[in-house]
Length: 469
Ligand code: HEM
Image (cartoon, rainbow, N blue to C red; front, top):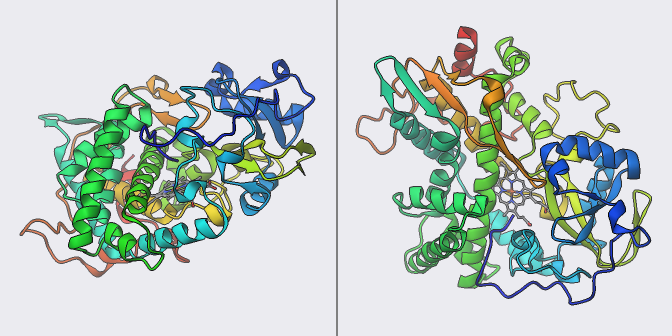
């Protein structure tokens, strides 16, 4: 979940010679390479192959020459997530050395942030983080999302016969970061540059290091400013929290939040929009009223988790999991996508998962994602605005022309070209313009996400859109 950090000390992985493979006794060429072409092209096929061969926990090889245990089973993933005294987050326990330039470095190289901490230290950092995220006012959040979603729709180019837009580049990749800059109390004009920086980090382009430096510089400026002039924002709340985070810790956690929030939410928005524009069954269920947008989101969270695999956990001692002998210091990879499709809990994958939020997409236990409700709110409210403004949005290419960048960690759509002939005026509030009208009571109702009643009622704009189709 963390981004490359050139300024951090090298990995904490101990310089102990790699034991060959975590499943001591197996030779490495017997291992399937999780991040090889086979795994990247068809992750689900790879999981099933591994499940058949090894059961719910499989030894796997990674392209950088390291080895790990991929946890495929739903129950086994829960066990690892919930048991931090046996399965630690501290990558310094690893008995293998991280090879130089390993693509794993951004995710497993130890850093002084809550992601790599356990116990009391984790609790101290995590309490500050969760308390600050929880202070975000739901109505304010919805207002920011609505305003930025409207601005993005306004920026789509149109001609005489309507408009054409790439919903990934011009919508999904923009919205989360714009909203997060507001929640952080950052100047709005930083938004577009931060979007570019986050994209460089995410795609690992040659600009990744410069982008990381830019991100750190802007966050340091923000922390210094909020120290002298606090405001109602996450940066100030982190600084003021009784856990007494240092300025460096605040900066590091702001960076963690930005990267963690952006990458995942961009992917979630893209997947829901893709389903909407390409999957007749998904669309039909929405149109027929059997499914609300919240239900649709739930479905995507089960079947297309933004993070397929989370590296990792490290065994604090010898133990057994899913019939395998795990040795102290072995690395485990949480197989979220594999767990969500485990035949033991989902014998029929075509069964709708509406109203069932027991997926492991946000993980569980002490490291469970603290920003899930914010990510879901950005996705749901943003898509609601988009569909209300562009009621006849259609896919602009054949579905088979859509391409995605796949890795063993995540899968993401490259582009989602769409067309529209009509653009409605924004009906919702715009807090920045004088023309803005007062919000109607329902426009500022709490964000429909994880609340008890979330998504019980179909959303009108979506229904109008679907009915037309
Ligand atoms: C909407 C899509 C999102 C998904 C699918 C997602 C998923 C995850 C997952 C799987 C983890 C790893 C948990 C573990 O190691 O057990 C995680 C951690 C984290 N996420 Fe999210 N996330 C999302 C959005 C967000 C947002 C919007 C924020 C912030 C506003 C956020 C902040 C974090 C942080 C700070 C962590 C580290 C927590 C810790 O280690 O204690 N995430 N997320």
